[in-house]
Image (cartoon, rainbow over all chains, first blue to last red; front, side, top):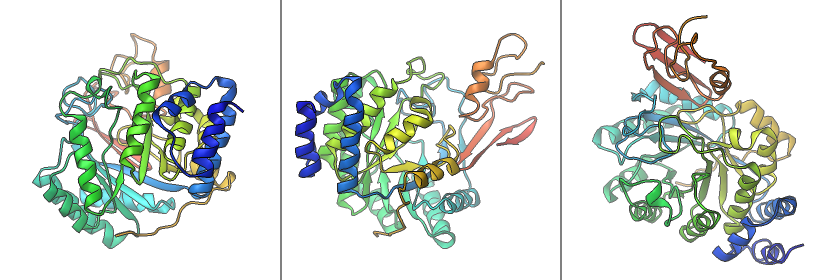
Length: 331
Length: 60
């Protein structure tokens, strides 16, 4: 076993501590023939510190498209010539989507809006939607509505929002190449407010956006510093019309190395497969990632693109003897 | 064949669309295949619907 894997075993597996930035860089530089050993170690860390359960979540776009921000990976920005049109979901459709999600055994249902931050119309729609979901479905409700004010954070906590998603998206050093309409620090501040209000924090990012290997390690280290309850890990799915639309798909071995590195950076977090895994990893890679540090999935479709068939993912979890985490409300 | 590609919106007759067709396994159509209008698309956890103002709703 290589030196870095020995140190990772001691730190992450035995002591439950995350690796440093420098160590994560070493992990991401491991040659292909070391990837199986790396994944095995990351899986061991996940099993020891998180257990065999997998948290299943469904997501829905409440307000699609027309976003004023310029996140270069996103087809919902109004600044690009993406074919995605603006559309709002009504409350009955929202409740139906929550019911569909709960029927898979999922414990989380995340309501997402493509906005810089919520205005009063959106907050009102979210309030009505959460009330309707809570009356009809036994599921934890999460939200992802962009940057928040303290008043909005308090409102969402009072509505019973269990978890709030706000990604860092990229390493601090690469962020200006990904977004120019708001800053990394603004994102960081919203994350801190969310946690202070007692909501669980969901904060992750995307890889495969042209960042360096060192910036990938930097993102993992910065997320570890933030210490979110959940880290959704997305792999760029290049969207037509966006500035990143012509980037190649991330190499699958690099994607698996990244999964393992994120697990070794955050031994106890919920590390979730999010968008792009179908293209980047395929069926076999999806299985490898679940045996390499991942312990949560988004089931079914994403916001504007389609995912693997939910039944296939659930069958895979059953095959891997990874039980679905049961509902446990924390608020 | 006629009509338009639901993914890229270009005419079906002018270009090969095998790559587009493959991608439509992982994303809903964005353009009406009859008139090329951009459609209003809503993706849900287990399906999608796409509405053309002229030709109605398709689902998947």
